[in-house]
Structures are given as structure tokens and as C-alpha cells.
Amino acid sequence: MNPNTKNTLPYDITKATNIFEYSKGLLGKTLRDFVWEGYEPKKGKGSLGQMVENIFFLLETNNYAGADFSEAGMELKCTPLKKSKQDDYLIKERLVCNMINYCEVVKDDFENSHFYLKCQLMLLLFYLHQSNCDNLDVEFIYSVLWKLPKKDLLIIKHDYEVIIGKIKQGKAHELSEGDTMYLGACRKGQKGDSLMKQPNSDIDAPRRAFSLKMAYMRTILEYVVKSGKNAVSNVVGAKSELVSTNALLKQSFDDILLGRFKPFLNMSFEIIAKRKKVNISNNPKNKFAMVSNAIAASAKCANVNRSEEFLKAGLTMKTIRLQANGIIKEAMSFENIDYIEVAECDEWIESRLYELFSSRFMFVVFREQTAGKEDYVLDDVFFWTMPQKDLAWAEEYWNHVKSNILAGHISEEYWWKGADKKKFHVRPKAQKAADLAPTPDGKGAKKFCYWFNNDYVREIVDNRRKEKHNA
Image 1 (spheres, rainbow, N blue to C red):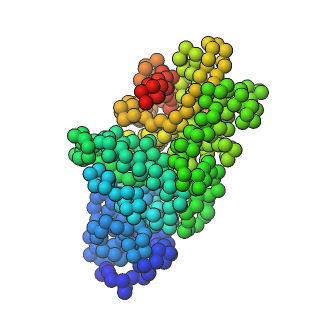
Image 2 (spheres, rainbow, N blue to C red):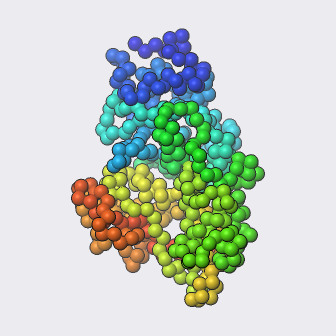
Image 3 (cartoon, rainbow, N blue to C red):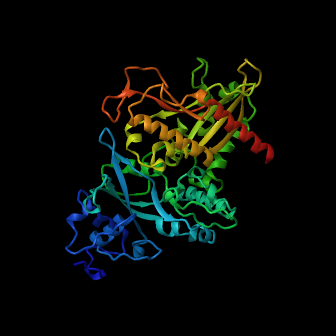
């Protein structure tokens, strides 16, 4: 029988740390180890969290809008992990926090929002996802009491305001997870699901929820794995930070980073390198990235793409070289295709490529002044998110990649090529024929990489120029 009064609970419901300590009793076990005869399992999305409340924490499910452990000011979240080929635990998906009601959410500021009131302090229970596994049989791996750090809350507050600002403008249908840093407005439901009303627009919008992005969740998991324990924490490792908490009290992250580039706009690449003490005397292949990094990092870290903020946000800095005639000679490369991940992923919006392409980018543009002289100057720097119409192309791209992987067609003759003019293509980054990647059939195959076409990169730059001209 389920004891459901405070007097019978084996923990103090008013103290987050006591609840956290009790939660460790679930680790390495399943709910079946605790369920009582006659319990009726829950069905549908979110049912696991309800069952953990009922079976392990001995609480009745309620529809209260506040935190699950309201007297302790703490929300309970169950989030899945998956195993890598190397048998490591990986984050499977973003952490969904609460649904967005477009017409209601615009009425609250951040400090009075459901997200802020529920998710400042969370008990995160990580479990191992297994296909077709009964909720009673999933194994729980880690427990973390996570309080959002003050610095993260400042970035998340700005993210929230960006999302709300777009909704207030009647642009909820244009929301993208790439609009923001840590807090995303992720898609919920399947294609064909009913759309939702939004304010100040007659266009209905897809259902979305506030969520902590996969990149942010990875940093939490990294902390737990490296510390070798289940812990109370609000600090993730010892990453290099680009901006301080005090700086974020005065300016947004975007404004701080863009401000670092402003003094160098229209300045010669060589002069910038000299001023930032970047040694390019041996003409390194990545010299433009080195100089861009020196400006962005402002001597605070060695590589901005490995900084605390970039890692938590899934943000990537990329350099672009624009020739004097307006041509962009080089396509833009991304990571190698994980054939196993693609084959096993059922939904486009759950895929690694969706996460990669829907993330934010910081593009640093160097423009050649005289044809053939390679006399580049810093021309522009801007944050960019892939538009929804291009994400539709990307979904077609991903489906094409997946169908070829499943068919065992992993070679140049099957992939989209740059000459196909489809915005994206597939080709290797380096020619190492003996270097193979695992495939679903176990045979292994040559490594191929995701790419933006060079004409698509030019389209991005041209659109940016038009926006600046019309501003």
C-alpha cells in the first residue's frame, strides 16, 4: 500500500538535501524493486517521472503548477542517458522543463515565470534509456541536486526574454533553439499535431517547451562522471570562462563578445595579429581562426569553442573568408558523421545533426580588399541561427544520409555533392583510407563529414549584408 502522508515518508519533504540523500537509494536499481502489488503504472510521455514520485518518493501525483517538492522549492526531473560505442554514458536529449502557452507566458516576467519558480533547484535523476523497456525496469544511474548558478541564470534570463520578445512580436512560429544560449524553446509533438494560438498574429505556431539544451546537460553529466559521485553542485568543472558574472549584470553575452571585435573592424588581418600577439609568421592554415580566437577570448582562454559558455550553449565560432569579387572559395566543414547514431535515431529533431544545425554560430568574416592580394580585413562578426526554411532542407539532407547508411551505401557516389546546389553536401575532411568508422552492418566505412556548400555560406553573408543595410 502507498503511504501518502508526511508522517510516513522516509525523508524530510521540506529539505532538498534530505530528499537528495534519499534519492540515492534508487541508484543501480529499478522501480520494480520498490513497487507494491496493485499499483497501476502510468502511461504516456512524462509517465516515468510520475511513477518515480508515486513508487519511490511515495507521493500522490498532482496537477500543481509549482515545483514537485514545493515545500523544499525543488523540481524532480528524470532524464535519459544512452551508451556510446566506448560504453560511456551520453546525454540522450534536452531537458524539457515546462510547456509554453504563448498567450499566457507573455504576461509574466522572468522572476515570476513557471520556469524560474520551478527550475532554480532541481533533483536530476539520470536513467539508462533502452528501447521498448517498461518504465518499471529502467535502471537509474546518477542523482544530482542542481542549483542553477547565478551566472547561468543571468544568461538564461536573457534567453527567456529573447523567446518572450519573439512571441510578443507575433513570431512564435519562427522560434528556433538557435535563438538562445542555454534555455531553448524546443519543438514538442509530431508533424501534423495541432498548432497553438499566439498573441499579435493570426498564424498558429507549433507547440514548444522551455528546455535546457543538450549541450548544457552534457556539462552537468560531465561534472558527475568526473567527480565520480552523485553530488550537490552548481559548478561545472574548471572550464575557462569568457565573461564574468559582474559583466553579465551590465551587458548580455552577445554584446560583450561583439564589443571585443568592434575596435578591430576594417583593420588589416596582419595588424590585428600583431596587436593581439598572434604568431602567424609560419603562415599556419588556421591563422584566421587563431586571430578570431584571440579577439573573442580576450586572453581569458585558449580556445573559445572550448570555453564554459560556448560548451554550455553548443555555440560555435567559425571564420569566413570573402574574396574581393564576393566569392567564398571554401565550403564550411563540421563533424564526421556518426553512422551508428544516424541509423539508430528515429526522429530528425532528436538527431545530432538537428542539434548541430539548430545551434547558434558566431561567424567572423574577413574580406579581401584587392583581388589576389590576400589583403584581408576584419569585415564583420555576427551571431547566426539557421532559418526554419533551411532546417527543412537539412531534414531532407539528414533523411538522405540516413537512408544511404541503412542501405550500406557509404561512398562518394551516393552522397549529395556541392555541385548539386542543395545547401549541404557530404565529403571527407581528410584522405585516410585506412581510417574507418563503425557502421550498422559491422563492416566499418570511410569517414565522411557534414558540410555547408560554399554558395550557402555566401548566401548567409549576403543576407547579413542586406539586414545591415536595411537596419
